Structure formats: C-alpha cells, structure tokens
Image (tube, rainbow, N blue to C red; front, side):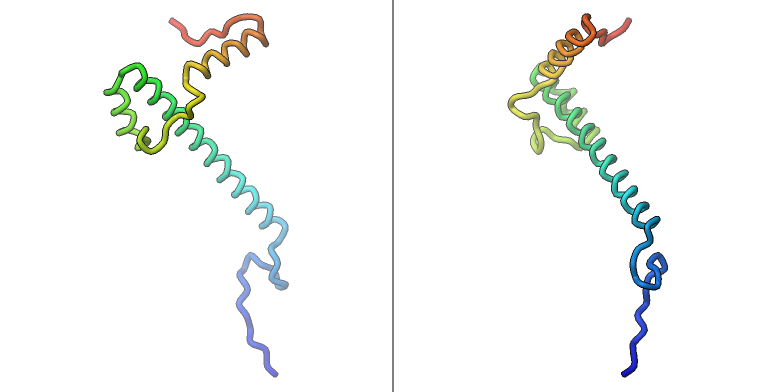
Length: 109
C-alpha cells in the first residue's frame, strides 16, 4: 500500500494544524472586521435617524439629498417607532445633567 502525498498549506505545520500565532492573527482580523461592521452600522443608523428627523420637519429636499449621497433610503430602512432624534437628545441631556449637575453644551458660536 502506497500513500498519496497531500499538499498542506504553508501556514499549517507538518501536522496540519494552525500555529498559535496564525490563530491569534486570524482572531484579531475577525475582531477588526466585526468592529468595522459595527462602525458602519452605527453610521447608517445615524443617517436614518437624521433623514427621518428632516422628513418629519418637512425638509424633503434635504432628505432626498441624504438618500442620494448615502444610498440609504427611508423606503428600505426607517427609524423604529419608539425612537427619534429628539428623544435621543432629550435622554442624553437628562443623563448629562444628572451625572454632572448641568446641561451639556451641544453647540457653540
């Protein structure tokens, strides 16, 4: 009986197992990828909340521009029924005042 040689990728050792450093590098890469996906999702959520806010105020040209610039359409994804930008801002101001004893300064001249 003769054995047929099997090609083992270079990053695998003779035994065919990944080295510890390769496993760690792979885990780090997956972690970075997940972090990037979270950042992209957060930005998309902010865009949706802003577009919904402007639409509720009647700034339809602004909404159209946002949708054209970002390829995020309120027809495909919209803010949840129980949340809007005003609610988020109010809750943040309340939290900040409770924690620091004063209202946050959100704008400047």
